[in-house]
Length: 423
Image (cartoon, rainbow, N blue to C red):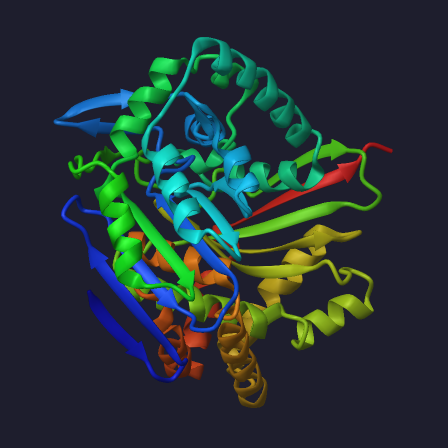
């Protein structure tokens, strides 16, 4: 196995690519009572159009999420119940680019890992179970349509992006999931759920060789083929529309602002930009910034205000949001503050303070097993190691931050989504 020591953060990572193409990544934590496993597929809500051998297929919105729900069904029962009865706490999720199945436990790790790998790699669907799940997920979708926080986000995606599937809900619509059949699920599982398109991450008081041994014994020998993916025509850096509004039952207007950024294919450069962008957002409008203090004192934001960067297959955007009596004014103030920093420079004292805080937050995040495994999986799919984050954070300069703020927060790239009260 390949062994890399990250001396500055006190972590050692073992990794091996098995004969079937699966990448196994293990971070031993000697003496820890809890262990964690994270089995992820490079397949999410945005992967709706794909090709093998040049033959293109379009699938309904919501298939990746639907498949995640159904993967716990096995011919012998339910894997979720089996893991729970064996002392594990299992769960799963689907994002725009990843589907992941994971568990934590304090005992029976090897048995639970065997169960996890088995049910994820062997699909079992029936028409009756798919029909039943359509009703369950339809209710989930309707609940999302009644959630102001989901509506404000989804509307922002529709305002920002013309072609990328991120503009549609990961769960799909009631109409789109009605098109899903067992054959749809079997086909998408065959295309994406194979070793070369997956990664297994584990951490705890574990033997890395044993983790690989279990994966070898359980998973298919064939690596499978990597599908070609299509996320739509190339996006303009301008949004589809600058503002989008909805009316719902909210006590105060809810808003979300987004600014489109150019995607970066290179993994290390992408990771650096994500870390730098988070720090830039903190400096521009985070809780320690002059802008935040001013907006808060004027009653334009409250302590629910947030900002940061978000990425997905084919795109990335800077965002800010929360509650405000005047979201348009908040947007204008953010643009004005970005222009001021571009013209007069970054506050060096604030930069140094926030950079130290970012480094501290990064180091604390390593204490979370689920955060570490998720970051390792995402890094594997994107081509970088998240454990290089400390060195990258330390390398960020004032000039980097100023250049990012100047380019990222231009008014013409921004869209504003608002959910207003019906009354």
